[in-house]
Length: 398
Image 1 (cartoon, helix red, strand yellow):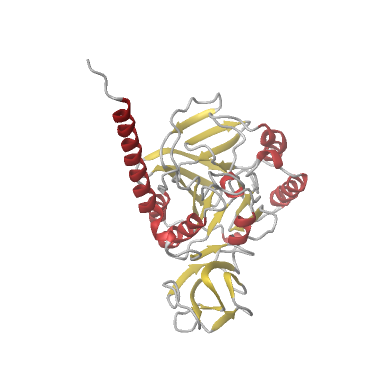
Image 2: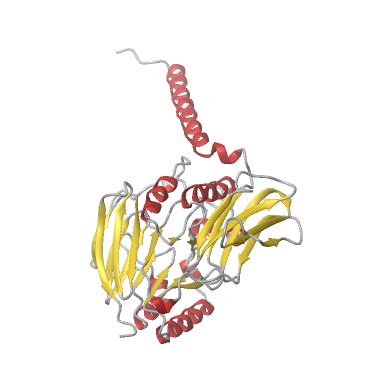
């Protein structure tokens, strides 16, 4: 058989690579194109800043500096309480305070110098109830919602299914962008969250390794970009909030090798006070890295954090980092890995000795609390198929 000339073979290889490059570019631009055209536009995100019964945080970014005003109140025709910034800025962070528990509030964002499509529209949210009422609470948890190397993510689709369950708040266990310097991905995250949460569901994030320092071409900024955009109760990258009879604790474990003693002391004090409180029946902790998983264990978390999780009998520890779903029970503590929120899923999973159930799938978790009873469900991305479910009963405040 006559061999093909070298030059022809090279041309074919170059043509093949060129086709691949064009396909990749088309897929990539199709995914991120809209956010390349509107840089530094971050749609409103609601977060808990202080007392969830009496306050609400609202943050957003505008492409140019401006003074923004938020009007809010209990009636759409009587939003007579304005908050106006004292100076023009691009990143806007408001904290609405003096609110009443279990109350629906309406708000409108306005500026006299610019107008974006989220401005001059009326949105609404509801404050948390008093803990003593022990009203039913439903919240959602998922993570690793960042795009993959092709710029694709299931985040928008999954969160659109998630909100059909009407959660009162959402927890994201980290990795929302590929890297801190991926400005378009920050814009995209805010836009997709805004589109799906109806601008009224608080969305709480813990920092992942991709926000902290990683990602192809991403700069190592130790969370400075994350802190610039995110609006949370504490300046230390870790925080907690109470909602009804629930305490939720967000840890900063974007880098497991850098768990500070200050954070450990804070966690110990926070858990101690929670277990003393007659208002708290449930304690949930979430961080990006898990202590245990079928992929790998994390010794630093096991040695520094898990002893406190066991001592204070945390009800569920949520995490991600690994792109699958897994429930582990170790020493009576339930550990949930929910890393199927949008990035590429894992290819293979060999269960650990403590694994109760696992699934390689895009998924999210819905947790229902009714007084001292918890019902947990993990849903496949279709929003119908249940991958896992279980019940717990609170041991606190008998």
